[in-house]
Image (tube, rainbow, N blue to C red):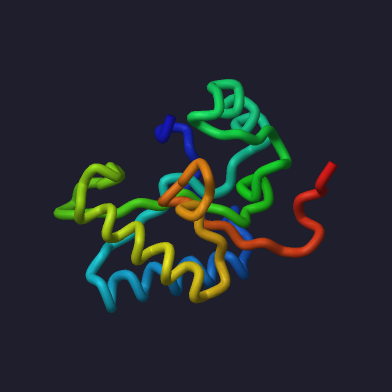
Length: 133
């Protein structure tokens, strides 16, 4: 699914981008974790396609996700030039916890605190973006 995911920083909200870049900088300088975006902006069509795969992928349809507004990204770590996503890797799990702390310190919401934990996910909540039914 990652092959068709957007990693285009230009499609992200500028305020979110600045906060996420700060998180990446802190993660590298303070903790020596290199980070990368797995997916940022997500089209409504892609969101619906992912939602159709079931709740183990996502619980929300188009326009119920901050991804559609460029206000969310799924991120992971690079180690020795390779992508590390696995929560079974103790090094990566430590990184996700640090990532969550740093992200929250700059005002982002971290998916690692959700019932369906999403350790690599952060989002910026702006008023009026998601319309609640």
